[in-house]
Length: 356
Ligand code: 1HN
Image (cartoon, rainbow, N blue to C red; front, side, top):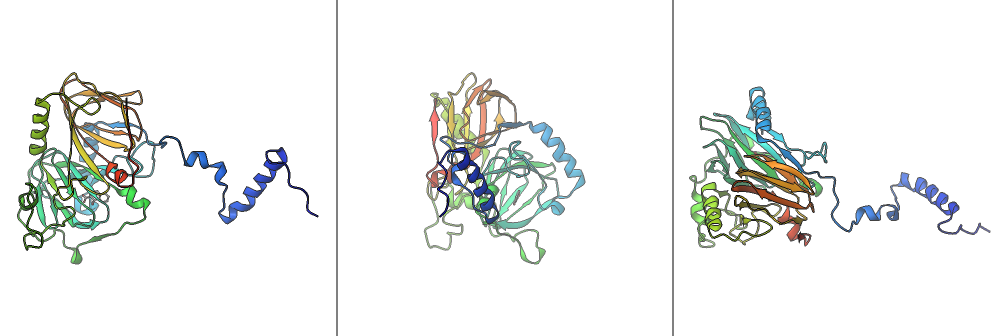
């Protein structure tokens, strides 16, 4: 005869449970009931913290790195913007990466491709290029340039001044899926052979037209044909929208960059947008499940993230955690660029927002 089991909840049962856990642990078995509430939270919970990087301070460190290591040696000379709540992760949010990349006059960053999707948002400099599958995008301040999953890309700076851009990648997402592949061009080649003149993609795919399907002129991937969204164009649209007045109470005047192939986000994992908040305008509180990186393109203002205030000045970078209540007040006309994982979340049926 075995002893009758103790009454669940009794001290004796609790002690026996601890004993059970101790015996199971070496076999990699653990009780869900001890962790369920931490796993399935009623609202989003992460250790991601809001944080502001002052551009000038980051820039000074980056330029010092420029004296000490070449772009070629580094492969990419980048300072990672790591979230203070995710130490050691090289991540700015749980799903995204952010970094500031410097390319000096005369330098090249060698051609490679990887399964991570990337965007570049130019912070300063004029005339360096990113070549995507052998087509150059000549980059100007606040241009958006995409290097989607598995497309060859190299960078070069034939201008006379340093160029710095923000790199936004889905590295933590790809790491989550353990789906990283990467390769360099064969034979140590630094640059992809030229396949098209600069501007060719915009001409073929950027004007609400595309090459006739199946024709020889249809040279870019059907799913993601466009890769350069110039500042001059998006800023003009934003200005025209703002002139009409009536900003959205939670976002201001906001435009999302789209993939012309399907009207969706610029890449499968990353969405990008710009917005203009007129001087004196303040947004109403908004929470969203997509943690976001915001860049101040123009103007001044104050962001409040769950009550914590951040002064926003030219080219500063702010990370806003998932489900944090965000308000932004514009002192002068405030123009922001932002990217997030909203693209992935919408595809997975996860995206939510709450408007206050
Ligand atoms: C990358 O390919 C670039 O191409 C920049 O400029 C930063 C960070 C991690 C992995 C790949 C680039 C990157 C990167």
